[in-house]
Image 1: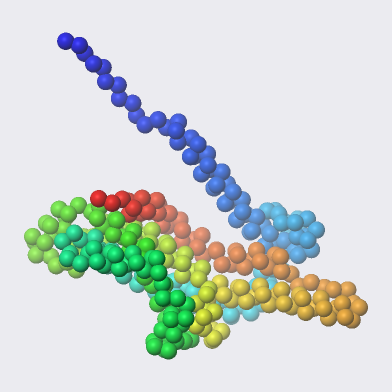
Image 2: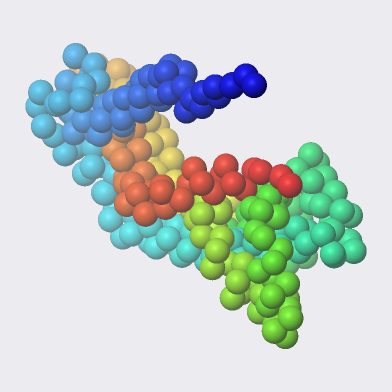
Length: 302
């Protein structure tokens, strides 16, 4: 009787070395780019023009931040509007996406396939810019309203599909035992499904936070009141105004024969980036540990 020796080998980690190297290089490049932006924001305009952008400023200067915070009350108002829209939009968006994802994930729901197809269809086609504008301004009457900055982005079909994939991975036995004990579907969703879905909820919440915080086009479309514009749009306005003032001042100086003096714009660009991204650097570490798990598990289909 012949004996067969079965050798069990663990996963070959040497195959992961190229992947790790690529990720390390990408991480270094991203960190280097951010440090370059941060360092350049503290350079003077003259230094940038003479030596270029640098991580470590030769001549530390706050002229860019003084230009950005020329009217601090406008910056703080824009921060407040951006914060409110981000919080409200994220909470409502995550809850609605989770609710829709849970419904279409249930195999015993009669219309789950039809609803899934309908939601997927919206990922391929949209109503367009003009119908959206008419809906928000004329039908809903949300011109110059903070809700016009929240409602257009409150539900994303891809987030619903991500939720659906995660919910389908939850064991059916957990919900069946709750039904036997007399729990309703709403109670199962709130007390059982959501507490075990922290990774995907945190992941989708991060997507919503990034989307709402970096969004500026809705302010351009629906907001005329300066106190209701968002931070990104305000910073874009500041940058455009500095460029316009530079061109006007250069033309006036040239016409009068006087030497042209420039208003700082190169370092202002970097300062606006730092002002815009700084709050996100505080939020990201709290959800980063859930990010990879939420995306990978949510993408698994049974």
